Image 1 (tube, each protein chain N blue to C red):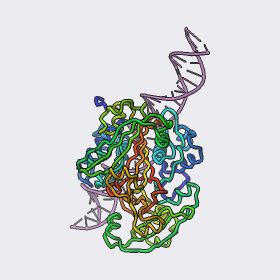
Image 2 (cartoon, rainbow over the protein chains, first blue to last red):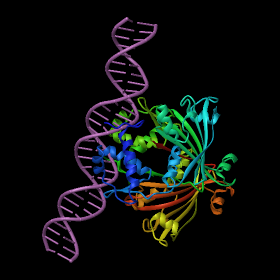
Image 3 (cartoon, protein in one colour):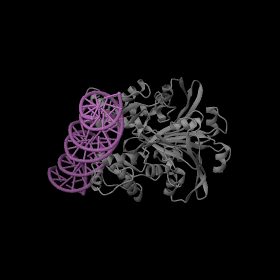
Image 4 (tube, rainbow over the protein chains, first blue to last red):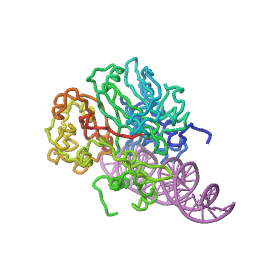
Length: 238
Length: 238
DNA sequence: GTGCCCACTCGGTATATACCAGTCAAGTGG
DNA sequence: CCACTTGACTGGTATATACCGAGTGGGCAC
């Protein structure tokens, strides 16, 4: 097997990318090859293929109709499905994304941060505050906390990249999953200013905790996304 | 196989219930039997067992540590994970839930409703407006729209039950999945009154579309949940 | 008594296989 | 020419099997 991925080399993860590309290159509601055809084309078993398909369905890229086939889903609105690749989401919409770095320093963890990251209060963490713009309009602002011991020298990295990308490539801390807590709030003044919104404008507040193997929390990202700009979309299989 | 479920008789769905009960009956962080042991106990293959485990992990009931085992997760806050069983969620918290039926009638579908349900504007739909209380405090209010042709005579049913339950039991329209769109908004006056919140209080606005087999939309539920009472929690596998 | 190693178990991944129920079109009989 | 059957598909589900890498504990050597 010649191909070699940096972190995830599981077949269904590789498949995921390939199939995602395939689906975006097709028109909505056009039909994909059958599962059996795809599995043969990519040289994997059908069960493995289905694992990737399931994920793509859950993420809303494709939908399936039993006895008929797989189809490309209608492109939907903003997917705030991965807080660590926000700029990519915006790019996916064909807009003009940019970021602004407010600050990047190291602080002692507050109670709240320590609890979320499984640290003791006062432990050193990096703090990175950024805002995200789309065509010069502030869309979201976020504060990331990362334990120093997990990623020493993090601030020397290119902070414009996705956080989980940096953690997996430079620190061998691949993020296996991210836990989200979402609330509807009116953020405090500092964040309202950054988003240029009024003091009665609701936002989606995200608490995202990235979790590596062994149940270690690798980052906490607290972000505010403008309520008038963002929809959170997800799907539950019953 | 003697047991017979009304709708879902897939093994992993049955397993899901059994395992969910098992996990809530155990203390957090206590260890579950191994996958191999569970699969034998329930008389299913390990692959089937894992399908149920995966769902329970995604829903946050249990977590797994490779090479060690499965563990019961820390009970978290409100799971607004299924809009169709809200009262059950509240009950799960050990509180005292109740509902109030504001109205139940039939109307012509508006543009928005027709689009979400795949109907033509003006088609008949049932409209059911309810609020949900927890210890006499309004927690959420919702408006459900159901095409009349899908569930004739729906208003004669016990509307206190879960909508997807009624649809599957009485109309043979099992809901396969639900698509959610969530925003942060300040609702209009009617809903603010029902929730007894101020005109600057943010809420989570849910658009939930229940989808049956053959990609038919069976209901649209628009709900507002108090921002100070509800957290939406979910997890993404990367 | 201490330290090392090996066997066993754990979840995670991948494969091959089988059957089901539904769709749909080609073929067939009236 | 229409109605019906048939069979080749589809996705969905379930099973048995195999191997991997990481944790763990018991027993053996020193």
